[in-house]
Structure formats: structure tokens, C-alpha cells
Image 1 (cartoon, one colour):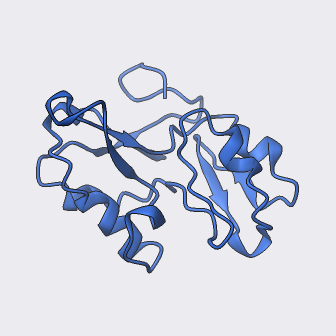
Image 2 (cartoon, helix red, strand yellow; image 1 turned 90 degrees about the horizontal axis):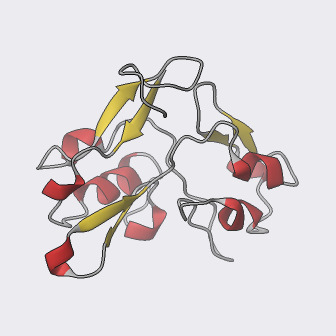
Image 3 (tube, helix red, strand yellow; image 1 turned 180 degrees about the vertical axis):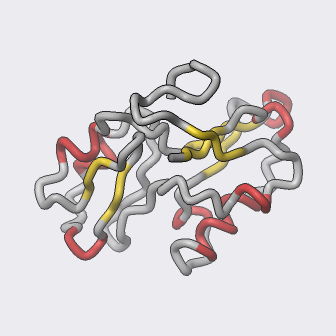
Length: 144
């Protein structure tokens, strides 16, 4: 099992290539808001950027609060989203501790599904897929 991690965000230049790749390749849209990974300034251009992406919580708070079962727990952390079950109530977005779910009244939910399709589009190698054990810890012994 693998999850998306952002171990080298100090290299990020804020180009949004990862977000646009996710939006286009995974969700079939071309908008920064329709991506599972979103890049934001961490306080200004001189302070760098941060990635807003699913932390692969296990158990995931968004799963617990979803009233329709649109969200289910992914083995190894993170979620599986069945968008056809979503009623756009916004409980998932409110429950996410890192603001990783994008949802508004007109759209379906967008959250990282840890597919890794964004990774090859990062020109500075800021993001990567990391192996995790079923217990929720990463291959190097750190917490997922």
C-alpha cells in the first residue's frame, strides 16, 4: 500500500503542476480547485509553499461523519470516495483536520486518493509515493 507524501516542500516553487495533473488526469477537470492536492503559500512568497493533501488518516474523520457512506476507509489510510452517493452536505470537509477536502454547493468532493499520478509532474521532486504497512506506519518506522 502506498500513500502520497510531501517530504521536500522547501523545493516547491508554487507552479501547481501537481494540482493541474491531478485535476486533469484523475478528476477530468482543469482547475486547481478540482484537485486532490492543492498548493498554497505558507505565508508569503519568501516563506515557501505548502501542499494541502489528504494525510491518509486511519481512521479518517471524513468517513465517520459522512451520512450516506460516500466515504469509506482505505486500507493503509486515506479514503475511497463514491461520488454518486455524495449529497454535498459538507460534513466531510468540516471534519478534515487539514482542509484536504474541496467541496462547494455546485461540485462533487475532491480529495487525494493516493494514486500518485501527480508525482511525475512535479519539476522539483517535492512529492512522492511512500510504502506503508497495514499497521499505518511508513516503511522507515515513522507515523503515516
